[in-house]
Image (tube, rainbow, N blue to C red; front, side, top):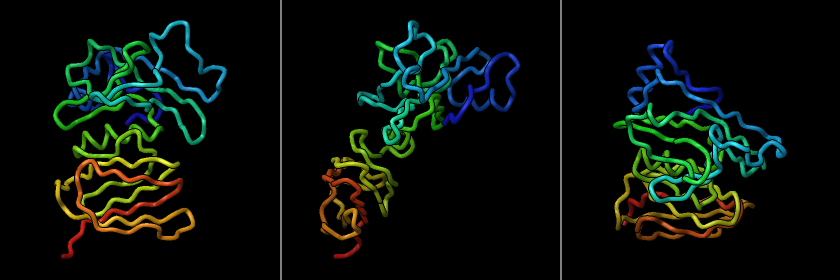
Length: 217
């Protein structure tokens, strides 16, 4: 995942970067562009030309996402990242911007190697990344932070939201134990239920939910 600066490219690219990009389905000898982000609201309006602009929104498969550097918790807009020309891409484009705005794409891959080209602070990016790596993950409409695992899943609700999650490695019909603590660390819910993906559960602001694979009778 890109953290800062442009991803190296061009005729004099380092051999290591060239190999890494090629394994992700990208020709690193092409010239990439960089869109710099800003936390100044006056500079975050629509530019006259969007040729080198990172858009606000995109799609992963058919799921609408806001994952282009908008930090919803701090109210800043840091849409920054590398823009790779389509001609340099031989791999699969897994996530792309809204067709009506800006350039991209964001996630390119070949086999099990992936390149995320934009700074992505919004929680919704966790969905395509985790889904690509494990075939599972939290749906982007669920405003939660946490880790999903086959044995244990822990999620903290950032606001009142519906958790919608497909748990990696877990099959339809398995038993799970669900425990929810409120923001005062008081247990408000505990039950053993049958898992049917995706699992859905309403959460209040700052609820902590723990989902364990149930091994008892």
